[in-house]
Image 1 (cartoon, rainbow, N blue to C red):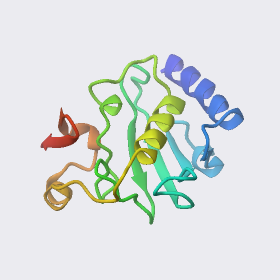
Image 2: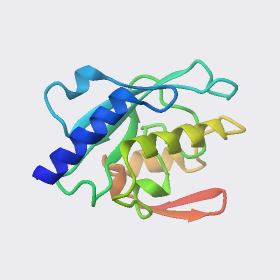
Image 3: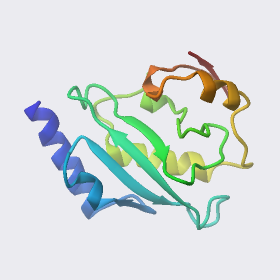
Length: 155
């Protein structure tokens, strides 16, 4: 557990001192625990999400960084996006099967910013209603199938 805490301390400092554009660590979220963070996010200018504010919840297991963090949108404003379910779950391969210990909170944040910024049309995934009714609370328990621009999930 000591290596996990050391790694999280390092990433916490990096996020505080040099956050990705539009991202800010919610300092209150790390006052009592280092294993759960909230990152405040603002939609990038010139995108469909410009001026919108979101929150990302990061939860780290004792196996981090060998195990990916659980990452999801939380709060009152969940972005309407083809890869974001209305319950905040994000279908992004680096959060599951493409995770590598070389990745970090900052690289995850950059990937999410990029995903939102490249969106051409605000819409929910086609299976949103079914998925939200039947999914596990932990998005990492979903077995995602990635196929071109479409996402298929297997619960």
